[in-house]
Amino acid sequence: MNRIPKHVAIIMDGNGRWAEKRGENRIKGHIKGVKSVKIVVEEAVKSKIKFLTLFAFSTENWKRPKTEINTLMKLLVSSLKDEFEELNKNNIKLNTIGNINNLPNKVQKQLNYVQNKTSKNSGMVLTLAVSYGSKEEITNALRIISDKVKNNIISIEKVDQHTINNHLYTYDLPDVDLLIRSSGEQRISNFLLWQIAYAELYFTNILWPDFNKLEFYKALDFYNERERRFGKTSKQIND
Image (cartoon, rainbow, N blue to C red; front, side, top):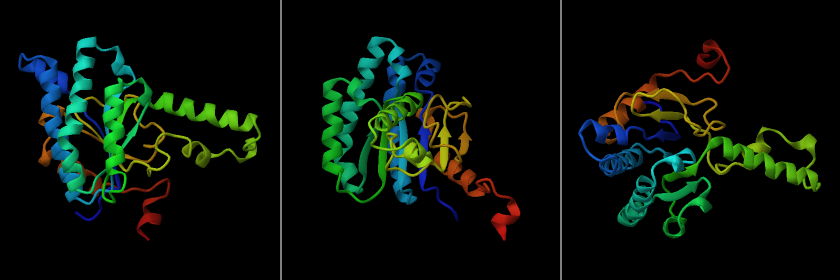
């Protein structure tokens, strides 16, 4: 494999459908999906990917049944506790994006704890998008910038793409190179709309709990075969 994406983002979709197809409670799918997360994180580290961002819980997911939300929050806390040592062992730095203040206190506390304990790790940055919505992120950035303009902290003439980028949750992350979505759905679902401007998009019919090592490398192979032109012609790229 010649080219490795610097930043991979994944919409981990299909947990509920995976469980329902088997006559199981949707929660069973979420539990099985955690195993796929472990596999992908391990393979991303082996592949020397520098940034991995996982869409764990969207702002829209708050509309789900309360029992499912509560179980998802408990699963997030237990997963962070279970994988904490493994993150440190692999020199992984945990990062979070989203409206974290909307999360239960126990979840916030666990996320903050693991982030603090892995903050000095210098390996792959693993970002969890939790209570995240891209439209909300961009709106929040514009609100902060508008306030700074109003208070003469920055002038309106100085506001450009970089200004907006620097006020997003992902201000310290590079743009996404490869976006993967499982389950067969071919939409972005309000995920990293600004950051995927030039990303390669890979859609697979595999439901997330069945997403394994082979499927991950299929996505990387897809990326490797793409010609990334960034607005240029093929001739300009190849000359």
